[in-house]
Image (cartoon, rainbow, N blue to C red; front, side, top):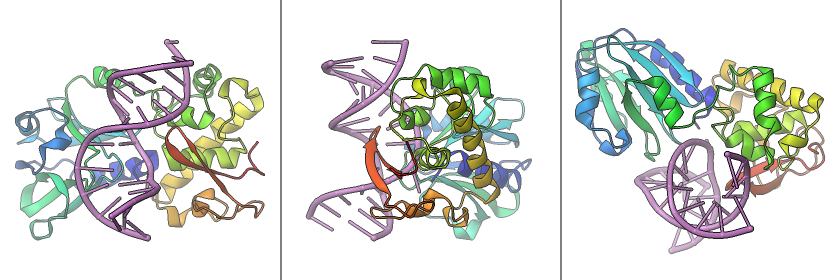
Length: 259
DNA sequence: TTTCATGTTCAGCA
DNA sequence: GTGCTGAACATGAA
């Protein structure tokens, strides 16, 4: 699940649960999510400290650790946060932050594509991983400049986190559908008008998804997200949705509505 | 049993 | 430098 709207919801979840509470103990049940860093580093950064000011860039969630840098989390394909009491440790919890009163914030990640990393130099961290401007923060000029120089399929450009960070397979398809742009269109050849439309539609799609809790079932009926099936119906024209593979991912679109 | 899955990264090649 | 393909990673669901 975790694309920008999901991670934004995790940010709010963190803010309403584990924020400002002293972390008594850090438990790592599988070190593979630490991305090569030692669990000792994570413990030293977090134990006895508190999390403040959670923020997000693209699909990365950060929280300030008082006095000593940040905690960075990426949720891969299946990650999430869960706040619970000691008796209900969720399955696939990989990192547990034990707080006061038997409460715990768990980083849960069944497929282990996600990462939990202590970070001192956030700027350097983002640069090293080539995380571009956040899709909700980037302005129209920067967006056009980034896309205007790209020659590959626009779907691939949206998936490229160094261009604009936050969209994954689902919301890239949704944005292209609602903007009426074919996923294989070349960004550098889009008219200024269509580029502007792509930008505003992207923002509207993400904003709406965040407001609705990033749950696909709660998205407007007019969205393509409900038709991600072979043989699915286009919510606009009723035609048949087509699936192609672009950038190694299943891409759904309506050949009638997207040109 | 096989295929597919919402993410990232890397090597190899055009 | 850009960008595509395929592979790899790990696990669960259909």
